[in-house]
Image (cartoon, rainbow, N blue to C red; front, side, top):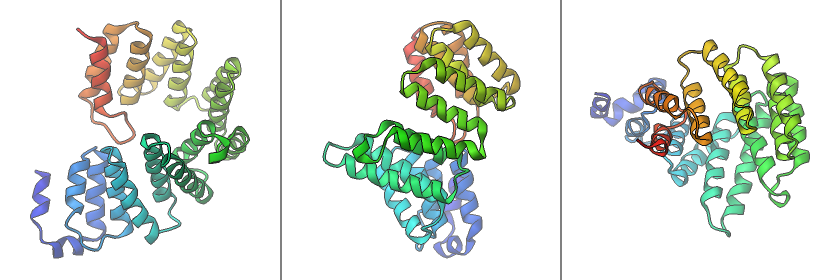
Length: 282
């Protein structure tokens, strides 16, 4: 039914303005990426918001070259929009991961620069600071990564969001293989934000990684009590069980429920849940 929108003339679409942006964004937020792109395709002179949505649609569809092209155009129109820069950094990061030896460094540097500017403009954006922290922890020094930058960013995060600051420090400690210290940081994050289910999910996953299955399950249970129908809890718990090869019957039930739950772009794609089901087998 949503395709009926496409029968409008180009003139009607151009006149829609913010209303068109809203419709395209709603399609994006319900993971209807192809329909969102189709809605925007007839717009001749796209504004920054429309180009940004297209870039996000392409990113979620795994078309990272098209994503960076659309987001570069959006950033040229709105060079100080931290959200556009964050998505541009993400898209170049994926291109770096998939590129050959010669192209990867260039894409990686473009990713870092976009993420750094996004965080500079809006240091409260948890997703952008998280992506930049991952970059600093994973990239070598000659590409702008490094532990000192990661620690400085963790301190910045902690100034506006103490719980997230402890989570960032946990990632740093884990990278150093200081596993007890990492676990302690995750516990402190959960204590500071007892209503944020993601804190308990992160701790549950880490405890399972360390073989502390009983307490891991208790943390998943706590998260589920706080948000009984949260799709990310379903997915992460099932994923943890499949990885550990335990509670596979429960994992199957969680994944089947996940596949029938309305998802957003923040949730893992359905294809990942289907892949986990295939790993479980019959």
